[in-house]
Image 1 (cartoon, rainbow, N blue to C red):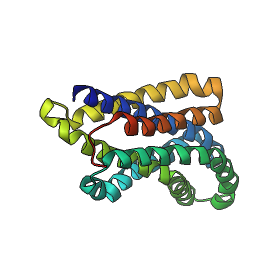
Image 2: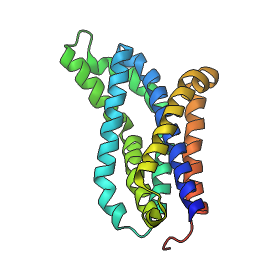
Image 3: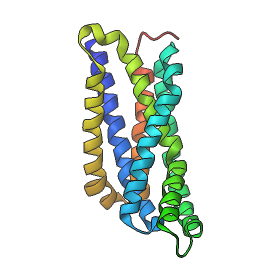
Image 4: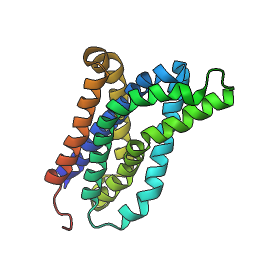
Length: 206
């Protein structure tokens, strides 16, 4: 049971690493179209946290009632990884379309509104899936609470991974490998988390 708890915490750390790594890369890629890097930063942050909240809200009850939370978690990690791969092509297309949507001399309201809504829609499949991984992992941890494991630890592991992912993607991985290879690498982390939860977690109702 103790090893199982450590396994779940390790998965949340890895998932957080990938999630904030994505945020850094997506921000840099979208700055090309949004006109100013501060707009890109705020648009991606807003889209990121809105998606997290929507995903957790929309799927929390279904995951909480499920007898197969590990499969939910694995499916969500696969969705994140697949959408990140699609964004390798979607973001350049979005960057080409965005100037036409914003217009040549947009008002601040139009510029920010289009930037925020467009970015939200573009990233939503991945960010909503990220948000839903938290209730899935909480459900998996329920049986371990009597042994001292708790949701706070999951958030701590996820946050620590997020900090590491931010630093690594910004200062090491993206400058060395470029955006496309960084997204490929981060998506592989999601796929590895999905595989690990299915092969490393035992005792779940089939």
